[in-house]
Image (cartoon, rainbow over all chains, first blue to last red; front, side):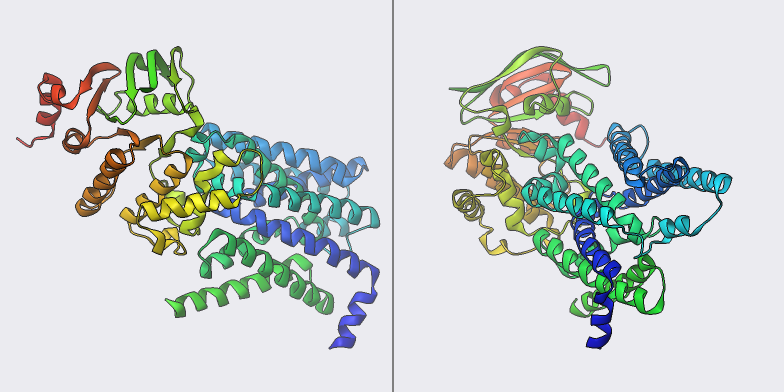
Length: 271
Length: 235
């Protein structure tokens, strides 16, 4: 067992994948709690599909993928927020529209240019081989920034998520905090989708929060449990991905589902 | 002493004149009930008092407290019904405006939250989950949160909505005690005209403009009151 594990870590790409993966898992778990509670679960789905569309264009143009997808995804995140806040389109409908349109756009662009090559496949389903040295450094910096902002604004994020009306009345700039959550989500998704895959990124946002909410009843406990379950699911999922040569994202989702079912069972027994 | 005054206040909502030339004063220790039919501008007026919607004309002035120091009890939303939060987390979030730019709450704010829990007799619920409480208990928790913001002025938006008669009576009694014993000024927006005249010391009857503003004693002699009561009867 230990020999197998030390073999895993002797590969540079695995060490990189672990470093980025742990940070991204932590970010998605923390933000996921807010998004699920704000009824924004599908925002991850929409944004990762937009990320896929942007990536396919970046590949055609032969420019750095992160440089194109980051601003596009951030802008779409703000736009989705604006749409649902202004009530012009219902949040879930807006996200569904944007999500499928971006995916369709990405697929058209790829098939018109190079067809479905290995790179495109990796972006859709995730690969632990996808991270270069530069990607790792940028991903680590961005994830640390997300974590720091979440910790600093933890109390405000709770207030805004629990009761927007009260938060507004106490003088908080609710819109600014909603934008902060949208920004952090967009950054996390762009950083994470390389490894986890555009198609499965959204479940990584939703699963830890839902799993934690089965058993825990305070916000802090839910946030902590979501973080721990996300980290464990990532680690187990990645080892499975390595040993069975299956896409990383799919493995993590499968492990997350098992944990969710286990927690649901515990909750049922407890009640 | 006056706490707040509305002077010739006009407000638009969705390009409709929802509040027209409204004038009234709230003094320290008042228990003001804002009544009126649906669409009479009650909610818009409340948003104006909280500074959530700017007036199109006139102004709201405060003495001895800032606009963001009003203890507000909003109506409950769907999101809160299954929100995983402990009672203590909810109450402590009321200290937000005292915290300023500091990211974390200090000991002083923690002890204030404890004090408000004790005041509303819910210290034993402190570690419980908000979503598992009864409707009446949840309102007490939100009241404690509002009091964390300030003890000067409470603004309550239909506080008894969705409560059973026993919980409603209890809640009105708590609000009355706060008003009489702790000198908390109360503004309550309510549909419940019966309890409004029973507990309120002053009434503001809205019909886009001010239909009546004065003491409850005077209000119950008016035609506006007779119509409100008559409207509630089954014939």
